[in-house]
Image (tube, rainbow, N blue to C red; front, side, top):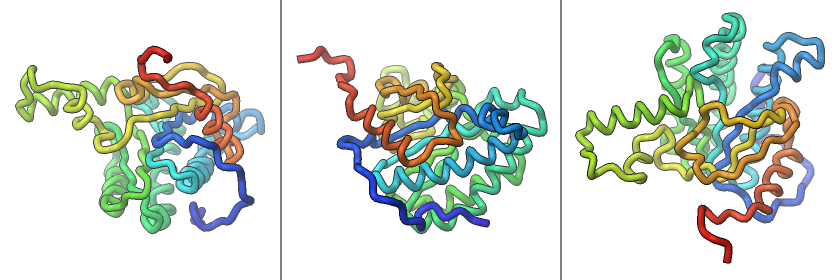
Length: 246
């Protein structure tokens, strides 16, 4: 049964005074959420998918221009096979159940990461999502799947070399054009849930000047109130981008 991202009306909330253009999430705590409830880790991942749906909807409501979810890293292949299979299945289920709503609401879906090792079924879902929404402009929804920040930079350099970009032509702007997030604003805010304080090879180049939050809340428990709390905390940050304070 599809979960409709944008159709449910909610109680009006106070809008934070400053909203980040791009919010990126390291979705941590699914396993701990399940363990606290005596459930298998796979149940935590399924609960986490519901949170993704809720977060996309609220970010749209708040006027966020891009949102990125760290769904599956290049290191996650080392997890138990059953868990890996569940994550693959959840990805396909999410695309199948939500693509109509995402497209209708102007979301442009981009799956960022390596295609190496992905099954034909997963690849078909990636193609479906990106082709269906490629002309939408309301919000970018990036799903970092089989993603690693260092690998992304290495791949960008390889593509630049293949395209004949010479050493003197390389600039930050040119590098940005070869990253998976080309054409999008860099993340203003990166949130890692569950209280862990590390970035785990996520958007290394793009997040050079991002603000970071490491809330204790587990990912499946993130709701609209928590999101507005993140935005309110962001609004209080004094972002100087390396410039001295006046």
